[in-house]
Length: 332
View 1 (cartoon, helix red, strand yellow):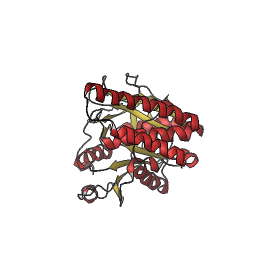
View 2 (spheres, helix red, strand yellow):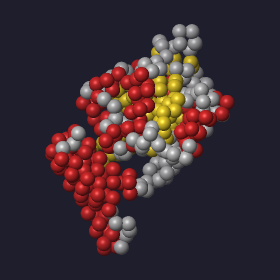
View 3 (cartoon, rainbow, N blue to C red):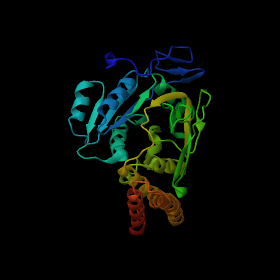
């Protein structure tokens, strides 16, 4: 489908840093070479985001890495979106149409299973509102092949300058603390150098996963549905002995829509923070997360009552009680 056009962020000139070496199929970036071309499957989850998904797929199709397949998992979008993608990208993109909305992790799992069945070495789980630099896939492969201790990595994720990206960077590494119900993205520029920089948390926005690592950890936790599935998987990867990283030389653009969340997203953020804290921090971790979230919700209730702010934090409260109830009943 390369005839649809080049990547929306534009192809970079070949400066000698990166070259695709023919013959034996090696990939060379700088002084690092990969003796073979491991198969990469990029996975894009679509839910009623057809225009953004089209742009993401156009950029992935412009990737200069030959051993690359693309699969779209449509999360029961309706409105003919799955059929439209299948028709427009026929022969270039695989489409899996889920019969129901499985949530982000559940849908990504369909793509991950596709990649495993394909015999791929890596799967790249991407938000549909991302635009990929043409050389990004090759840089991620070279970085991961160069250090087999890493189970998952992310490119640096740029974004339009705004509250979530004051420096034009949305993610350059991160940390997560389930007991405090918090994640933090590093937003400072990092030097574009070869290799991987270790980090504490890889965002699910662009998680490049070594599939061999999932043989020891399992896939995303589908019951979470939305939010915290990336933190949960990162915790499991780390517990299994895998390192997490960010690849400074690889970049993508994330079309961030702002920090305003829907009530549904807020509900799952609160509920799942408790579930993940319970799963990885046991009773003490869950208790700490419940306290942290209760303080946040209480402050919001106080602001709504005293200052007349709206809306009331009903989604936060429902999510918190749902998380507590799940802990009491026993989390799977």
